[in-house]
Figure (cartoon, rainbow, N blue to C red):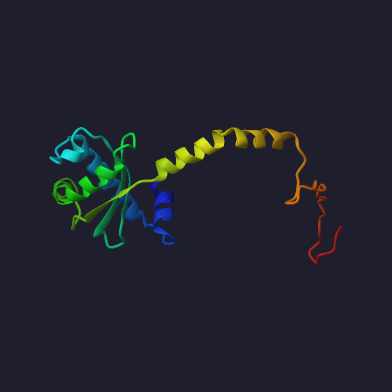
Length: 163
């Protein structure tokens, strides 16, 4: 999962195997720290935080943590609160992981859950359901709505002539 999602967030560069492994190690350590509820920030009091992915830079110095609050209602207060606590979290990570340098942490809102929920609600809408049920029985049409003729499969030889 992390391999493909880090590609999409990162852009055209592909994360190395080491980056993926270190990102997962950081994610597991952060989840353990956040589960203990040791943060003294009032905005994080009693909140559950979901850490979905950790992207780490190629030099292993900067980690971008994609997270959201469980339920998604308090994201506008939870993400800034985590960014305020990042020095404490970095210190706790340094005690738990075995890296030469503990990366600096940057928390970002993970919007993939909201996008998936939006897509699911769109697929459940009556308009889309009507189009899907009509598409099973209908003949294929072009952009203007005219029926498409069935394509004939023609086998061609190596020089381009039809057989």
